[in-house]
Length: 304
Image 1: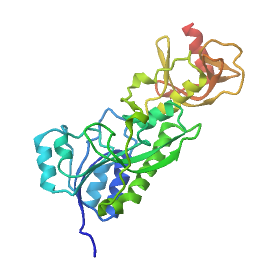
Image 2: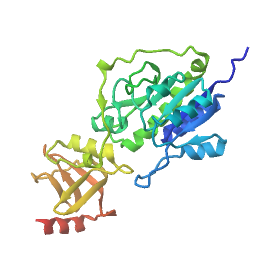
Image 3: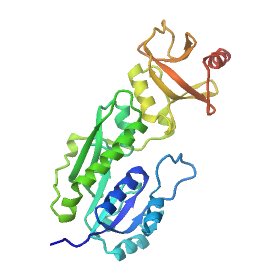
Image 4: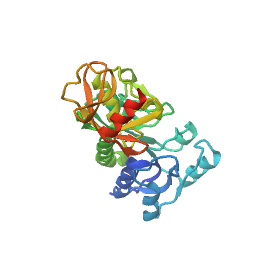
């Protein structure tokens, strides 16, 4: 005997939102309504569009500014969902919405590690070697509900956060795809989410990308990887000039006791760090343009 089709309201944005929405559709879920965001003109939009998927599939969607608005609650209740899903939706959902139907959130880490905002960026910054995606029951407290499914992926030593985010998107798709039949049948696993064993991080601001050259090279390199473009990038100021690292690798040469900061060695740009090691900076941006070693050397001479 076939189980009746389940109806869902889906809160979704970004690549994870796109892929997980497609998994629900492929799994036969009746998506009655999608709640998403309008893209911000001030943000670098490098990711796929949930709105585009909705328009292609003929799914009704709304882009409310306030998740606590009574009109939003009324629209969700009117859809009469059996399930709620949140896939990289950026607002916290109030208890009134969570009370409408069982609610599940996809988080981009292996909970309880890296709870909170920007988990991929924080994981790369901290030199983690593994991350993944976790589907969990939603509670008002962020990333705190029981875990329903997880999928791990590796973080390689030179991966940037952008590259890791691509893996996490696939991990999210796999985690949801594998557990969806059990979830729809009402017998999905519930794994305790022991918050005492994890970590919580807040959002990141562009200023958090400022380089402290007194730190060891490994820490500076992790910062670069965590915020490399299309994120705002790790940056350093020399006088009134700002330089952003686009691409870098650990430097294998000798920096001959140079002081911490940007330098030119053997006609190559390096960033000297506090432990005497350095980064080989393969692409350095100034006002959005790539700097040559000769041009940087001239600017550094002017600054000093």
